[in-house]
Image (tube, rainbow, N blue to C red; front, side, top):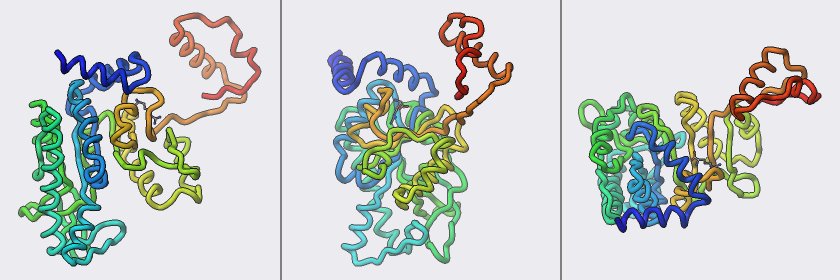
Length: 330
Ligand code: ARG
């Protein structure tokens, strides 16, 4: 009982109006349980914001929403490789993974994975570590990249079983070749593959920056790919990291239903992003095309009138649209 009261308390303290929160809670609970959300957590968040992260995830769990979590460990690995005196190179943004690199990467991934699982359990919720068996890979380019995997198939059994048992699945971005060789997968690529297989309602990228930034370093609240993508990609202030992120999100959303949206936010703002209209971060959707009709034909006009009347459950005065004398923007 105290638990429930605490949840409601936290919710009201963090959120705008409880009506908004209720509406989103209903929306998110309406999907198949394993398909609520995929949350990608960068290594930097595990290192610096573990408590905020686990509080936000535990909060979702208490509301009956079980996110599927996938994490990287990039900064930790850079550090560990430097400490071990092992050179680390990147090609086209991918880490060249020699056997020496893998000998450091693999135990480090396991360690970070367990750290997150234990931190979630410390918040009193169930979590399940899934370190293997999800991403079945071939070698992407063994000659140039070494032990880097190209995802061939995503096996969801372990993920779905965890969710059925009420445990938050916590995945690493390691895969295996058919013969069992452990392969490294770029965390954003692993996220994309997982998302394509799972088709979740929300995809959430957690980063310390808390969203995509405009030229004054303010968070861009929303991006509609249909309307904004080309223009954004032309902007000189969109730096390479953000360009890549936008490209990846664009590619990812093209293979998902229109109802799926991507949120980029920070661990501390996740709850506000999910349960308010305004959110706190960047929301990316495929978006609908906007059409301008200087002189709408009667079919278009009829469609619009029917829609408006249905939405407001009232009848429009005859000739109202015709008398407007303005282009119709749909
Ligand atoms: N709560 C809604 C969602 O998560 C809307 C979020 C709006 N966020 C924004 N950055 N504009 O889907």
